Length: 185
Image (cartoon, rainbow, N blue to C red; front, side):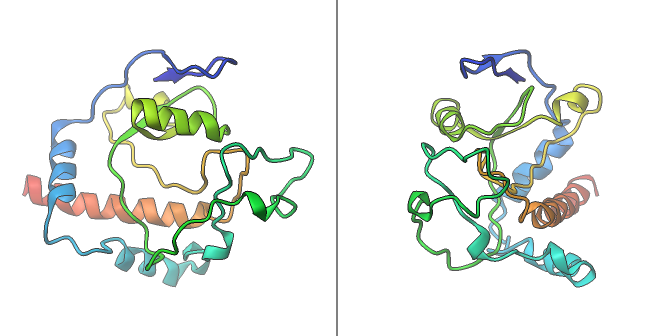
Protein backbone atom coordinates (compact mmCIF):
# COMPACT_ATOMS: atom_id res chain seq x y z
CA UNK A 1 0.00 0.00 0.00
CA UNK A 2 1.19 3.50 -0.69
CA UNK A 3 0.36 6.93 0.56
CA UNK A 4 0.90 10.00 -1.59
CA UNK A 5 1.51 13.18 0.40
CA UNK A 6 1.41 16.59 -1.29
CA UNK A 7 5.09 16.40 -2.23
CA UNK A 8 4.31 13.44 -4.52
CA UNK A 9 6.96 11.16 -3.05
CA UNK A 10 5.77 7.58 -2.84
CA UNK A 11 5.54 6.43 0.79
CA UNK A 12 5.02 2.81 1.76
CA UNK A 13 2.09 2.58 4.15
CA UNK A 14 2.01 -1.18 4.67
CA UNK A 15 1.91 -4.32 2.60
CA UNK A 16 -0.98 -6.19 1.10
CA UNK A 17 -1.47 -9.89 1.60
CA UNK A 18 -0.27 -12.02 -1.31
CA UNK A 19 -2.90 -13.94 -3.28
CA UNK A 20 -3.33 -17.63 -2.46
CA UNK A 21 -0.83 -19.95 -4.12
CA UNK A 22 -3.49 -21.57 -6.32
CA UNK A 23 -4.32 -18.22 -7.97
CA UNK A 24 -0.66 -17.40 -8.48
CA UNK A 25 -0.03 -20.84 -10.00
CA UNK A 26 -2.92 -20.40 -12.45
CA UNK A 27 -1.63 -16.92 -13.31
CA UNK A 28 1.89 -18.28 -13.96
CA UNK A 29 0.49 -21.03 -16.20
CA UNK A 30 -1.54 -18.46 -18.12
CA UNK A 31 1.39 -16.08 -18.51
CA UNK A 32 3.75 -18.84 -19.73
CA UNK A 33 1.36 -20.86 -21.90
CA UNK A 34 2.88 -21.10 -25.41
CA UNK A 35 -0.49 -22.31 -26.77
CA UNK A 36 -2.24 -19.09 -25.74
CA UNK A 37 -3.54 -17.31 -28.84
CA UNK A 38 -2.17 -13.85 -29.58
CA UNK A 39 -5.58 -12.36 -28.80
CA UNK A 40 -6.87 -14.59 -25.99
CA UNK A 41 -9.54 -12.20 -24.71
CA UNK A 42 -11.17 -11.30 -27.99
CA UNK A 43 -13.67 -14.16 -28.09
CA UNK A 44 -14.98 -13.25 -24.63
CA UNK A 45 -15.05 -9.51 -25.36
CA UNK A 46 -17.02 -10.10 -28.55
CA UNK A 47 -19.52 -12.25 -26.64
CA UNK A 48 -20.00 -9.43 -24.11
CA UNK A 49 -20.29 -6.83 -26.89
CA UNK A 50 -22.98 -8.96 -28.58
CA UNK A 51 -25.11 -8.50 -25.45
CA UNK A 52 -24.04 -4.94 -24.69
CA UNK A 53 -22.86 -3.09 -27.78
CA UNK A 54 -21.23 -0.20 -25.88
CA UNK A 55 -18.72 -2.62 -24.33
CA UNK A 56 -16.83 -2.86 -27.63
CA UNK A 57 -13.67 -0.87 -28.38
CA UNK A 58 -14.59 2.85 -28.55
CA UNK A 59 -12.18 3.52 -31.43
CA UNK A 60 -8.61 4.73 -31.74
CA UNK A 61 -9.75 8.33 -32.29
CA UNK A 62 -10.69 8.43 -28.58
CA UNK A 63 -7.37 6.97 -27.40
CA UNK A 64 -5.20 10.02 -26.72
CA UNK A 65 -2.08 9.95 -24.58
CA UNK A 66 -0.92 13.46 -23.77
CA UNK A 67 2.64 14.38 -22.89
CA UNK A 68 3.26 13.96 -19.15
CA UNK A 69 4.12 17.65 -18.90
CA UNK A 70 0.80 18.76 -20.44
CA UNK A 71 -1.70 19.21 -17.62
CA UNK A 72 -5.42 19.40 -18.39
CA UNK A 73 -7.04 22.81 -17.96
CA UNK A 74 -9.42 22.16 -15.07
CA UNK A 75 -11.78 24.90 -16.25
CA UNK A 76 -12.84 22.59 -19.10
CA UNK A 77 -14.90 19.49 -18.31
CA UNK A 78 -13.65 17.50 -21.32
CA UNK A 79 -10.47 17.26 -23.38
CA UNK A 80 -12.19 18.65 -26.47
CA UNK A 81 -10.25 21.91 -26.08
CA UNK A 82 -6.92 20.24 -25.24
CA UNK A 83 -4.23 20.91 -27.83
CA UNK A 84 -3.53 17.96 -30.10
CA UNK A 85 0.03 19.30 -30.40
CA UNK A 86 0.63 17.72 -26.97
CA UNK A 87 -0.55 14.24 -27.95
CA UNK A 88 2.19 11.59 -27.88
CA UNK A 89 2.71 10.22 -31.38
CA UNK A 90 2.74 6.45 -31.19
CA UNK A 91 2.95 3.81 -33.89
CA UNK A 92 -0.47 2.53 -34.88
CA UNK A 93 -0.99 -0.93 -33.43
CA UNK A 94 -1.82 -3.69 -35.87
CA UNK A 95 -4.75 -4.70 -33.68
CA UNK A 96 -7.18 -3.00 -31.31
CA UNK A 97 -7.29 -6.14 -29.20
CA UNK A 98 -6.18 -5.57 -25.61
CA UNK A 99 -2.80 -6.66 -24.35
CA UNK A 100 -2.30 -8.45 -21.06
CA UNK A 101 0.33 -6.93 -18.77
CA UNK A 102 1.62 -8.70 -15.67
CA UNK A 103 3.25 -6.79 -12.84
CA UNK A 104 2.91 -4.53 -9.84
CA UNK A 105 -0.18 -2.47 -9.12
CA UNK A 106 0.16 0.11 -6.35
CA UNK A 107 -2.87 0.54 -4.13
CA UNK A 108 -3.08 4.00 -2.65
CA UNK A 109 -5.14 6.58 -0.85
CA UNK A 110 -6.16 8.61 -3.91
CA UNK A 111 -6.77 8.43 -7.64
CA UNK A 112 -3.63 9.02 -9.72
CA UNK A 113 -4.00 12.13 -11.88
CA UNK A 114 -0.38 13.22 -12.25
CA UNK A 115 1.28 11.77 -15.35
CA UNK A 116 4.77 12.81 -14.23
CA UNK A 117 4.31 10.91 -10.95
CA UNK A 118 2.88 7.92 -12.85
CA UNK A 119 5.97 7.86 -15.07
CA UNK A 120 8.34 8.26 -12.11
CA UNK A 121 6.76 5.34 -10.23
CA UNK A 122 6.94 3.24 -13.36
CA UNK A 123 10.65 3.96 -13.81
CA UNK A 124 11.71 3.74 -10.15
CA UNK A 125 9.41 0.99 -8.83
CA UNK A 126 8.26 -0.84 -11.98
CA UNK A 127 4.66 -0.07 -11.04
CA UNK A 128 2.35 -0.63 -14.00
CA UNK A 129 -0.70 1.05 -12.54
CA UNK A 130 -2.14 2.52 -9.39
CA UNK A 131 -5.61 2.07 -7.97
CA UNK A 132 -7.41 2.66 -4.69
CA UNK A 133 -10.18 0.07 -4.43
CA UNK A 134 -8.24 -3.14 -3.75
CA UNK A 135 -6.52 -2.05 -0.55
CA UNK A 136 -9.82 -2.11 1.31
CA UNK A 137 -10.52 -5.76 0.61
CA UNK A 138 -7.32 -7.63 -0.20
CA UNK A 139 -6.19 -8.16 3.40
CA UNK A 140 -9.68 -9.35 4.36
CA UNK A 141 -10.28 -11.64 1.40
CA UNK A 142 -7.33 -13.30 -0.29
CA UNK A 143 -7.66 -12.30 -3.92
CA UNK A 144 -5.76 -11.25 -7.00
CA UNK A 145 -6.11 -7.68 -8.25
CA UNK A 146 -6.97 -7.61 -11.94
CA UNK A 147 -7.13 -4.12 -13.33
CA UNK A 148 -8.90 -2.98 -16.48
CA UNK A 149 -7.24 0.16 -17.80
CA UNK A 150 -9.59 2.89 -19.00
CA UNK A 151 -7.34 5.97 -18.86
CA UNK A 152 -3.71 7.00 -18.56
CA UNK A 153 -3.69 8.05 -14.87
CA UNK A 154 -3.25 11.66 -15.80
CA UNK A 155 -5.25 14.86 -15.55
CA UNK A 156 -6.98 14.12 -18.88
CA UNK A 157 -9.71 11.93 -17.44
CA UNK A 158 -11.89 10.32 -20.08
CA UNK A 159 -14.78 7.96 -19.61
CA UNK A 160 -14.85 6.57 -23.17
CA UNK A 161 -13.00 3.37 -22.27
CA UNK A 162 -14.64 2.50 -18.91
CA UNK A 163 -17.18 -0.01 -20.23
CA UNK A 164 -14.63 -1.54 -22.61
CA UNK A 165 -12.12 -1.86 -19.73
CA UNK A 166 -14.80 -3.61 -17.66
CA UNK A 167 -15.45 -6.06 -20.51
CA UNK A 168 -11.71 -6.63 -20.90
CA UNK A 169 -11.05 -7.30 -17.22
CA UNK A 170 -14.11 -9.58 -17.07
CA UNK A 171 -12.75 -11.50 -20.06
CA UNK A 172 -9.36 -11.86 -18.41
CA UNK A 173 -10.99 -13.09 -15.18
CA UNK A 174 -12.87 -15.73 -17.19
CA UNK A 175 -9.67 -16.82 -18.91
CA UNK A 176 -7.85 -17.01 -15.56
CA UNK A 177 -10.70 -19.08 -14.08
CA UNK A 178 -10.27 -21.58 -16.94
CA UNK A 179 -6.61 -21.94 -15.98
CA UNK A 180 -7.53 -22.16 -12.30
CA UNK A 181 -9.94 -24.97 -13.14
CA UNK A 182 -7.11 -26.79 -14.95
CA UNK A 183 -4.82 -26.35 -11.91
CA UNK A 184 -7.43 -27.69 -9.48
CA UNK A 185 -9.01 -30.33 -11.71
